[in-house]
Length: 420
Ligand SMILES: [Zn+2]
Image 1 (cartoon, rainbow, N blue to C red):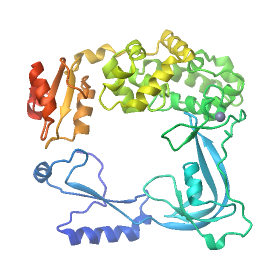
Image 2 (image 1 turned 45 degrees about the horizontal axis):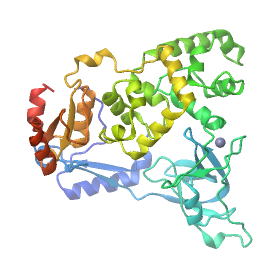
Image 3 (image 1 turned 60 degrees about the vertical axis):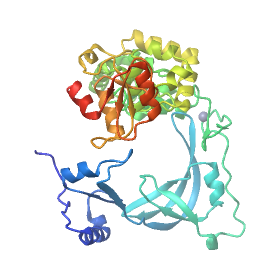
Image 4 (image 1 turned 90 degrees about the horizontal axis):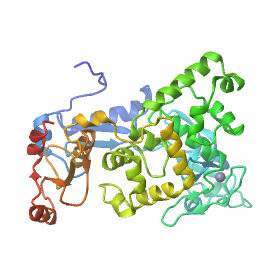
């Protein structure tokens, strides 16, 4: 059908063929012009795939084989601290460059305070680094024999590396430390703007990081709404911004106003509100006012939305400045409600509860299917929902649905009924 497929794919007749293939690529993986950490083996017959079906999380007809990870020894030069847009502070090891899997590694995540203590990390230590499944390499151990006798242990610095130097706070139940000075901490402000303009958020092309940094420094960017007040003169007055680039940037800023509600909500950078969560919230609450006025119980009644997300949303909307900023953005024309285009979607205004597992589709995919067709998914059976019943569906849900006289559908009937 014209899709590009990998020329390296092979059909294997039996498990010995599979291992021959794995061993072949284990030796030659560095010859590929992209990085791999393993191989996926799939049953290549749609009928068998259907018979094998899915567990609640995984297909039973595909499995990943992970190569053993390569490990290298190198010297620790320093520990730096990175501040994320939500204030999370991550210690990062600066290393003497070392080759792993054909790439030069200079930095490795140390994750958090506990990890530094667990490793019992000392200054100028020789460490073992692995580049496993994750993109960021990690320190997995220490060569204690090479430790210098008077080397000082490294202590986690509980002060933000930003110019304001706030004390870091550890939130109960989380491993990370946070700088809670969200409004004034420069790396957090920069992080929030970077997130706001990113492709998956407001998709504003042409904003270099340096430009944003400068604008923040001269106080032209404090809130997201300031982006929409930037003028050509202001942009040109900033070093190296040519008139053409300034014009392109202004056009990109103007175009971003047409981004749909779920992208706008995601762009705000509320902690724990990622892309999927934003879409889920938007489909359930329809407008920003409904979401802002929702209490804790109403928020957690949405499927897949837990306590952490609800607390984070409530904290965000409790802040007067955040509320004012949303009003400003709304006034500027950013979209804070589900648009009419959703009116034509087959599941619009319908709420579903999924119970049990399905041969034909994973629960995850079924959920996405409902969301992308304008419906919403809830976890508790109430009067105005439709129950989709799979294998091993919860007997309590079924009896409650029966007592409320609610419609129950199998996957097949669901698909047929809504012509999906
Ligand atoms: Zn800070």
